[in-house]
Amino acid sequence: MANKQAVPSKMNRNGMNGATDPQVVPKGERRRFTAEYKLRILAEADGCTERGQVGALLRREGLYSSHLEKWRRQRARGALAALTPQKPGRKVDVQAAELTRLQEENERLQARLQQAETIIEVQKKLSSLLGLSVTVSSDGKSSPRSRS
Image (cartoon, rainbow, N blue to C red; front, side):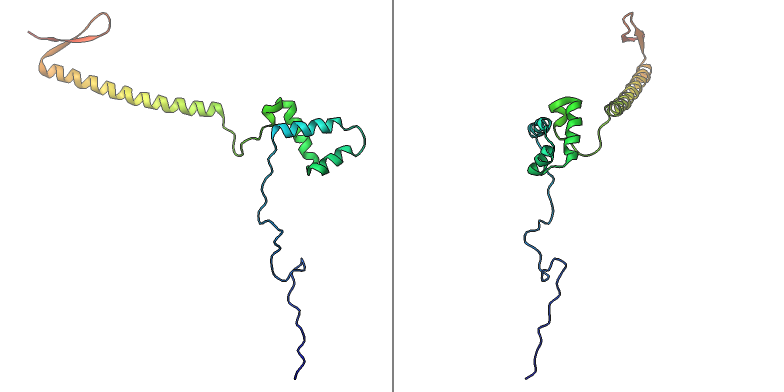
């Protein structure tokens, strides 16, 4: 009988045998903080007087110093309104949106004006073919008058 030596299987850098670690989450989820939570943490951080207290607070809450910096700027800009999470993506330029809306409305009204002028021209031609004269009254309204 030949001695068979155990061949070590290939280990990945975590020391695991090719299997994935069940503790690892495939995709992390972004944390969201409420305005009340932010204000509470800022109040606690502002109340820290001794050396190391802010660091202990950050470790306890699982936060970074950049969180405090960002939240302080938000608080200075406008308290709770600024502390609420902002929608990701491009910010809408209100003036540009209004300009676009007005341009579209202008195009629509220009098309209606052109249609109305065409109808008036057709009415004039029809009245001349039928032998009716169009008179304009002092209030700007026209009325057909029969030629006799």
